[in-house]
Structures are given as structure tokens and as C-alpha cells.
Length: 86
Image (cartoon, rainbow, N blue to C red):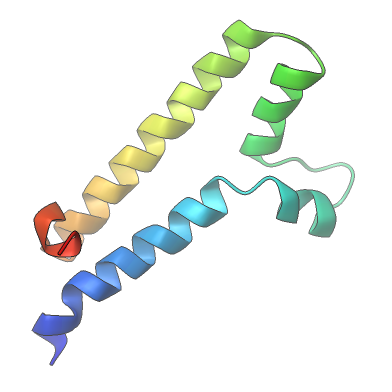
């Protein structure tokens, strides 16, 4: 049963991580006023500070970190991307 469920478990882990990594609304509602998540900081640089160069660099770093996480999750579960995309 578990070998057949591995692609589903891997895609579920990746989906939960990606939704939490890109979340803007939840940290602002549930978080305190003194702490900021990485996505909130990027959003602040884009909108408030108008520092597009720094915000773009940090957004690219976030993209790379998410890609690395997905790759590691696929290796840990020993699943190919084609198995998840079926």
C-alpha cells in the first residue's frame, strides 16, 4: 500500500510547503506586529520601499530555496516528478 501512496505523500508535502512558503495573508493576520516572514519582507520592499532590485534578488533566492526543497523531497521519497504529475 505504501509504495503506491508515495507519490501522493510527496506531492502533499510539497504542496503544503509551497503554500506556506508563499503565504502573505496568514502571517499578517496571525503574526505579531514585530515579526515578519520572508514573503512579507519581499512584499514590503516592492510596495513600500520601492527597492525593486533588492526585492527581486530576495524573491529569486526564495524561488531557489523552494526548488531545492522540492528536489530534496523528491529524493527523500524516491519519487520522480513524472510519478507525481500522473
